[in-house]
Amino acid sequence: MKKLSNWLPFIGILLLVSSCYNTPSDDDFTPGNLPESVRDFIFTNYSGYRLDNIHTEDICHDSLVLEVELEDGPGPDVDLYFSLDGTFLFAAKDISVNNLPEAVANAITTGFPSYVIDNNSDDLERFEFENGSVQFKVKLRPAVGSGSSLEVIFDANGTIICQDGSGSNGNDDNGGDDNGSGDDNSNNNGGNNNSGVPGSVSNYVSTNYPGYRISSAHNEDLCDHSIVLKVELEDGPGDIDLYFKLSGEFLFAAIEISPANLPSAVKAAITSRFPGLDIEDDETERYEFPNGTIQYKVELERDSGSDIEVVFSANGDIVCRKD
Image 1 (spheres, rainbow, N blue to C red):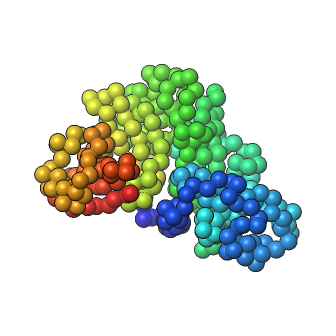
Image 2 (image 1 turned 90 degrees about the vertical axis):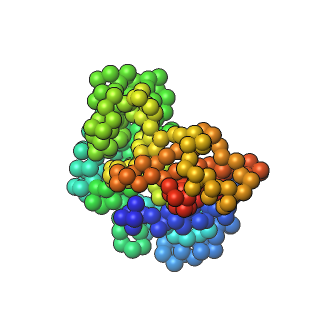
Image 3 (image 1 turned 45 degrees about the horizontal axis):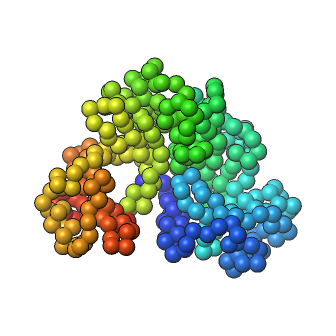
């Protein structure tokens, strides 16, 4: 995930900010109570524009941001995105499909062969960052039928930054299977429904987990705050979750285990580092990495009812934690 340098620094800001705020509603923001830094930024950089709308927006990696829509200015209408404390993130401008870089168009053709670009005015945008980097938000709809649409953000080289679906990351209920294709998966790579899943991921599943079916695929925020693609498999010898970088590179497999099967070193670490906290039975997993490394994810419940997610090495060292 470190390679996504154009985006992840902003994710870090958003995660830090969101931990200090109660989730706001659109009513919390008006022109009169915008953070001073937002007002100053607009006055300095977009004088002559009219503020059309202010609301919170859930970007496809599930980070809540503030969107300020500007129009009637000396240039094209523009949407500005800020963290909830007023830090500028990026500007978004509508573009046509002809303005997509060739690398992005090729990535869509290769990675989403059953989808086409939805070229409505609000569904194709160019994100412009202060460091000069650009990204492209594209809405994809099924080429055939009425399945779920996907929202995908690419960098200029065609690498997927994040993706989401209309509803549950492209896995809403359309009267068929979990991925909304409306069929029974019987003729799709051994039962895998690959709608919206990068080709490298579906190929990895077909090669390494024959007989399994992809039941769900969505972005996940790990306890180190990296955003990854989680692919849930079922109908095999045992259910399993696979984690990939957003670019499609395999990271690790996760298998649910009983807390009783945790290594003694991990149990001792929990007792010493988190005295009095209980392990949730159905939230304990073993992470298996390609190099043979093993880690263990546990969820510990406080008396208040809130949870702590902790990942341990096999030796009981804390890899990361998320409160």
